Image (cartoon, rainbow over all chains, first blue to last red; front, side, top):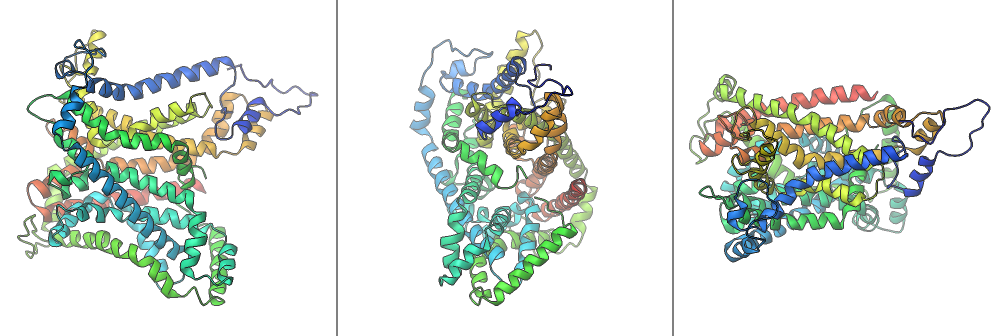
Length: 312
Length: 315
């Protein structure tokens, strides 16, 4: 790679200008020219080629699913790699799905469950994180240590006892059974506490001098300052809940209570291939989250950085 | 995430705590009551749905409990555990799980790194690249299963169709013991690499400018800067991603359960599926719990080992 803007150092030649890529990096903020690759034409073309190739590989499976959903059943299960079906494109699969399926019910269930879990999780995790970070109470250190330690428990091993609990509480096949166990997110409490720890104490002191109590401080000082992290936690929890498979799968057997991922997994008919219908159902099932991601892309990327997982 | 307690940090924490105590002493409002009030809702759920099930599971692992509730009171001592250690299925499914973890962790780190470095060049179309690499992460497992079972179909699937174009005979992607786990690993790479990619992207954006300025002033070329600035700066993130990835891969269940049901011939059956089958198909909850706890023990040992390696590297 000799396409670098920088010539090697020659003695007696003072260097006062910033290298071009550094200036660029500043100008673009987060959207920069990577200083560790050259800026000449060859690296740029190679980069673009590599990116394009990977993008194609990553998007082809999606594309195939979308393509299949617009085929007739005959074409959808024909062999080979024809992107253009012989019988032309059709909306049959979507019509059939809407005509007979439980899809709308599952979609409503998914939304209700994901929204409830997200709201409850963010609320109780933020309150607990505030207690651990900003108040004194007996045993808070031990309790926080237990909370952090519990992050290591693989949730799957709790499935069996949880199911028994739900049986005992008579909750199997209710919304409560799907929602309640999912609101415990010790990792989120940990992330939030770390963030609250960083909020300057002076702000809180000022509010207290004005006569604010603990609740007031939490509501008017801590929460408004934590919007980005709360958004990040909410997004994470929402995505995880929306796509959660095992627990909703076990705790519901009534098709009227299934979420999209669970319902879709029961659609697959072993007696015959119905590629077009299954693809159509799949696409309808994944559109909501894709739209959410497109709308909040920048925020999601930023939120990953602010959770302290990325960066420093 | 894994914070290491260095003496300096401990001292800082100590002085913070001292300040905290002083502040508390001057401030009656910050009494214990409010703290408890704030923590209670979470602690109630935490106890009910995490601590209690861990306890129940542990208790059940010493009994002959079944899904129907019979045999709960039949204490069998360590029988379940001795059976688990002697059960060839436990060892086989554990082996499959470890094999899956080995197959997925390295590509999921390296491909994510390559993607992040390429996107980070600031190539126009950022929005498209990010969407392309992360979108698959947003798909429910059932959708991933639908798309890939279609691509993998032996006589009609697109992958074998592509092979045919190059004159190669089709492969039984999910039906041949030789290839099944590789196919699952491929699906997993496609499905989950986006999250690691975002972590790397965030880490890249956090590298301070002055390092590159200094390197550039010292006449370091592009590859030299990549090798001596960027990659060393990403070391912590790589460690973190590797740890998270190993933990995630060990817990594999969903995509295998849907794509192969653990077949062909048990070649892809992970330990969590064995636990699931034992508990929910054969109704042997006591035994399933015991196997769960053997697995849990393994996870804890691995986590501690990883934390140790991880923290030693940071000093």
